[in-house]
Image (tube, rainbow, N blue to C red; front, top):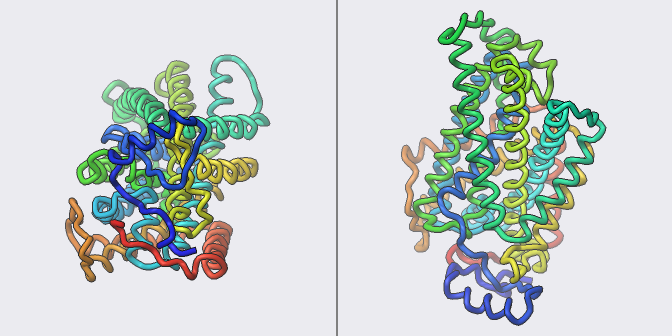
Length: 474
């Protein structure tokens, strides 16, 4: 099947809406492969997806793990990860305003670098988001157990995975019922979460600096040397996947020329600052070794250190909200990656069907949720995080390369509303930095990541090598 046989990836959403409404009136359970997704997300929704996805792991799961690897210099690891993310967010913003389509990085790379690169990246993005979402859900399970523990109810660590599985199913069903419903949940969760974090981190910073008490004695900044800063940056880069997830819902964004760049760049800046402050506050409360021994929920003890039981309860509730928002946004983005690849006929076309009752790609959501639940059952937090980072770093590097190719060729349709400042230095450095971070990952994560990419290349040879992609604006 060629892409010429497939329906257009049109943007005339308003023009399509009456037909959608008539179809719903006739049969609310009808679905079609010809409908487009509606533009229902504004700037708050885009920021909520970006911030909500990123804020979970970096603040509530990683501080203990990161401090155990790099000590207080883990703050530098987060800053380095944020810099790489920013170098990629700017080129991604330009491409997204030129091609505001669902699928994000896959769509940009397939139109800039061709079908093979598009297939490998599109399917790798699917699996990368699956690994990331599984990581977020496992973190969510830990925080559910800790929340009940703070309330005096012991559930036991054996329930972490079952809880993650149940809520994984629940978030998938929520996204089936409508993007707007998922976005409303995301907006509310992120607003409440940011309020909690600002209060706790402001108080913790004032305490650590001696503003409201004796200053915390500083620990040696590089207790394990400089190299762990780089390996830790490779691990925690999962925390910055959210900005690119905004691009995967570009086809549902209102005023994409304005809102996409603001949502992507803004979310990286906001979250990067929060991460650096969090590591400072956490390592000021406990030494790196002790913080590492506290594991995935170390921030609960940090909250208790500064604000007593109220602080601990605020952190467990915040962690619950954060991992919830990360998982919810990631399931949404995973399904859009599957939807875009399928609509281009690189996967069977039935995966791009849209349920007209809810206006969502329900089959793609099923293909997102199923593998996520399988990976959740493994419970391997660090491996899940690093494989997700590996696949996304490949994606980010190729996004920068795609921008360089499209700027060189300047096809007639390429007319972005946003231009990357510092071109071509920014995309070149962004590509090199993305690929370089992969080299600092643990071997198991690299092996799994390479295996996923080889499998996707095999799928291209078997199924998609005869597919001809339509132009970006067709």
